[in-house]
Image (cartoon, rainbow, N blue to C red; front, side, top):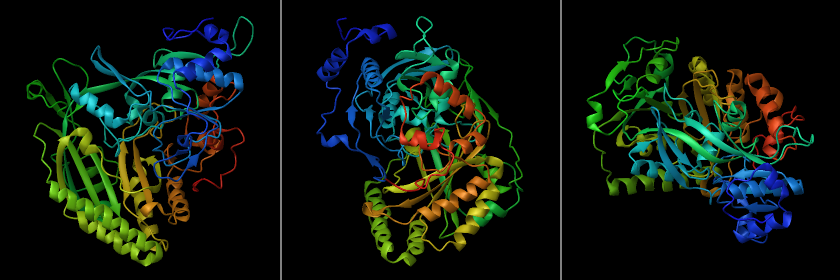
Length: 552
């Protein structure tokens, strides 16, 4: 069978009839292979804590390329692993076999209106920074965003990356439809053989099980080649950061009405789609907006309940050396952006980044200095601040230096008790502890492997910085931190280091066995196997890994 690039979508039978030579010739002609002696073969994550050297590296730019790569891997019995930009602080994308990098498969495609929804259609390797800019050009935006925007869209959704907001689920909840290349599937009824490589388009209505297993599936069911996500009219955010003693956050009983900045829901006359507060920078749209204040929900956690619901997007950073917490409240606004001061920004960067990194490096040799560096960092920002700009610019911030990190999600109603235990532990901890401990909130969702599945959730994350790329002690700290979170029904962030085995995951995720069943159905030959997947999902994964908190 002659191959032409106009054959965008192969049927399983067409793929099966291509010769191996034809497939390799086309992939070579289209420069999909990375040369075997290329220095770029080595893969390393952003923090430089995990790395690998795959046997073979592919850089597809079309869905057809992905089909051909997957068929080739099937014939050579090679596991495949998809990789984005490598921002995950774990070995999630690592493999010693064949790696498929999506950096050349990264275009925004189209924007359409489907009923009351606005849908953005993108390729999987598109980086969030580029997605934000493209959406802004079209007067649109994501309704929420995490603390960084350096990841690919596929990486964000398949790991259930999250932002923060009382009424906002994880970002994966925005996905309406995907196309995924699977390596097998159901038994072929014609000859009883295993299923063939194919591309499947799925949603909550079509191939729903594959959809639910893939959108937060860590690349263990196949490679996503096409993504459609919900977006909303562009908006600005006004974020006010205010300091508070941690004792006030944890100890004061609730005694005042919900703040005037309470979360609200708006509905325009031309749409039945609900968006929080003023979901557009268009003043004309605001004239048609009806506001309805969301009722305050009391979970018996006092001041914490009030603050968590005091704005659309609330997040906190706890600085244990000063026993202070910085609280950020952000709401949508029509006000113009507040211009920055270039000199102040340069000076702030010099102090907050370069001087702090030097101090941290010095503290590697004199650990007792760490607490004073922590107090220095708190002092730099202790007056609070106000930011007002496009939403995606306010959501994100500079996460400074390479770092070790882990993050866990707990049921929201256990937040206060958990934070009290973390505070008590850190007051007694002898090892040097870095900062801040980030605290964020998400609404419940129905995504099978989402840490927020069926739960209003609090996310709590800890970091240990690596000044100038040098290592620092972190394993014991992470062990103790994790033990506290586990005691409060914690679920790990999928992209970060954790020590949960298959047995433990089955305990905390009601749909875990269903996920494994769907994975086995669509990948009977374990084509998407990797060390991360086998460690946490493999059938032999019954004992805790000694490498859970160790870089490789």
